[in-house]
Each structure stands twice: as structure tokens, then as C-alpha cells.
Image (cartoon, rainbow, N blue to C red; front, side):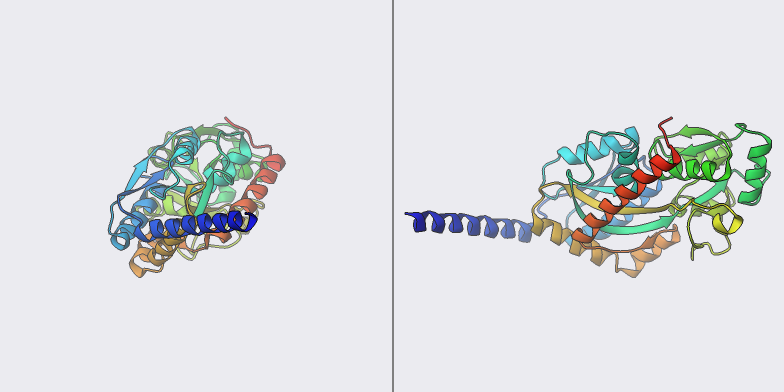
Length: 323
């Protein structure tokens, strides 16, 4: 009887494995949604549309971008967390939703337990930009301006717990200056108001800022990283200008709900990496200021865990709070 029971368990496990593999082979049989945690028109939205269009061509199914801005990415994250784990609802997660915001405050989702990483898309340097009317051409001149007139300048962010928020607070801590924080629902409205002069300073990703810097609508005065960006080599780092400890590289990845079958995750990772090897996709992303990089699902999981530890330490050291 024991042999028969064990044999039966083996048959059931094998059947489940075969069924799972068959489902993955047939996947996808309908449209896939990529949920974006920020407003339409921003960097995340643009990236998702480039990736989705290219994935659709390979998978022979529509890939629809669904913007769910609000609560600093929590609305989108919770929506995807609760979605059926079948590969048809994905998320363009990034440094804010899966590392910074969870480090800053307690959320109703766990970026590690509630998601299956599919893979990395790429990263973008964080750049300090100014409204063109600001009377400063370098980050050092901004520091002098802020010290001469404390709290007369405001900075825009894509929301509490986002990279522009963290970078600005790290800048303030490093330089001993103060600025008023104006959080927005995503980078698109934040950068619009910085261009319009309602706010004067922002620390967006190069992916967000590059078209506006090229058009002369914003002034780039410093890269918040250890090296200059190859996509904007004339802009010095903040470190080169004597401003230390402001190192924020913004990364982007694709995630599925937890318990999505492994064969589906592997198929999506293969397609994503195929898309990211396409020279036309690479060019479209680089034109906006993003550098493509790929990872396996396991590599992505390890990377996200490391990022969570890193940004929790930054929150404690810089005493970053919600405004």
C-alpha cells in the first residue's frame, strides 16, 4: 500500500508538471497587461510602451500598458499583487516600488514575497536639473544659492519614497542646505512643473530628463552617481563638484504576481531578454537616457533583496521622512 501511495503521489506530481509545462507552451492565449505605477507620459510609461510593443511582436498577442498612478506606486503594486498568477498581469516595477518606498514606510505589499521577478530592463542615472530661470549653472552654485536664501527654493519629486525624493534629501544632508519638498503623482507632472517654474529643482532619472535637457527646457547641473553618464558626458557628477554621498541609480524591471508558474516566468524572461537584445529597442531606450541590462529571475530576486537592505540603511542614516 505504501508503494502504491508513493507511486500515486509521483504520478500526480508528474501530471501537474506536464500540465504546467503545457500551459506555458500555449502561453499567451490572450492579451497581457503591463501595469505602470506612474502617470502616462512619464519615463516608466515610455519604457513600458517600448518594451510592450516589442514583446507583443514576439508573443503574437497584444501587450497593453495600464497606468495606475497614486500612493507612490502602492496602488499599482497592490493591484498586481492581487491579480491572478497566470502571467497575464505584469508590472513595470522600479527602484521606488520595490526598494525605496518599502524602506521608507510600511506598505500593504511585500516587494519580495508578493512578486515573482521576471527580469531587469535597465537603469538610468539620476541627474540634478534646474528650471532655466534659476541663476545657477553648477551644483556648487545651487548650494551657494540655497545657503544664501534658505527655504526659498522648492524641489519636485515623483512622490514620497521615489528616487527624486531620496536624491534630493541626500543632497540636502550632504550640503547642509534646505529646500521645500513638493511631491507629485509621478515624474511627468513633477517635471512639467519644474519646467513651468512652480518648482525650481528636481532629481529625475536621465531617462525622464534627457529630452527636456536636449530641448533647453531644463538645465542639467550634476549626475547623482559615481561616474558621468556616457549619454550626457559633459555633465559632471555631484562628487566631482565636492558633493559626496549622493549616489542614486534608478533601475527598472518586470514583475509578476507571486506563485506565477515557473515555466511562464522563464518564457517571459526569455522574451524580455530577446527584446532587450534588439538594437532598435536599445536605441529607443538609450535616446531617452536608459542603459539596458538583463538578468535571470533569480539574479533579479537577489538584486531586489540587496537594494531593500541598502535603502533601509539610507533612510536611517539620512533620516528621510514622508512629507
